[in-house]
Length: 276
Image (cartoon, rainbow, N blue to C red):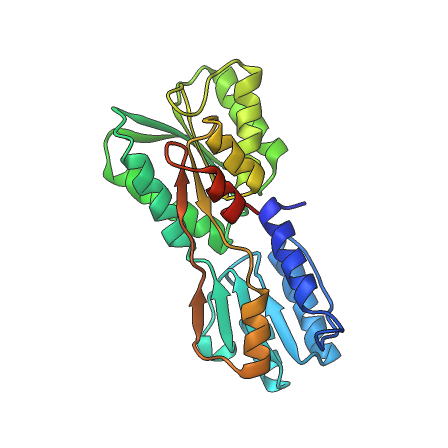
């Protein structure tokens, strides 16, 4: 339930790592880095052949990765990067989260508002998705006198928490004209608070809505003009990992091809071809 992105990513993995395709796969999920590390350590102790990691947090992985290397277990990162020496893993198939954030912020700057008063709803703190998507906005706000953060809080990918954050700002009476939510689900929750307060949003309206991941339903919101921008995060990484396992890594890092979508130019074909 973390997000539509995670659902698509997990389904892609489970369709690929099947007995019919030569695999015996075990899965563990947590939003907490320490729980992930403990699970990874158990997989190492169980003697798996490959350890695939989409890390909740970027730090703290060195010990378990070194233990895996000592045991002859090949580690492959997917979705998110970690702070570890690249000698400790075979390859990474990841999104460039910093570029995702930069592309979105560049788009927002291109709207040429006289002032930017931003509600910034962050994902799980310390994840590479949060660090990358937050970093570009933080840098822009620091550099421009007409950009300001009204509130900056984590909703940990939750629509319900995002709605509460935006509702609190509305109740405070503080002015805002941008919601920068680090995934689609949180953007959806933010919009629910706006709708409850009869605050207009989307193309030509009072509040610009920015999300990430490109869920099909989110791109439909762009197509309808209810949201303004959605940054793609490509979840379909299993085929790359399957190829690495079967044929060896041809390069250390594979960056997923991604783009951003503007409500002013998105098409029905975009929704069909890029929605998850």
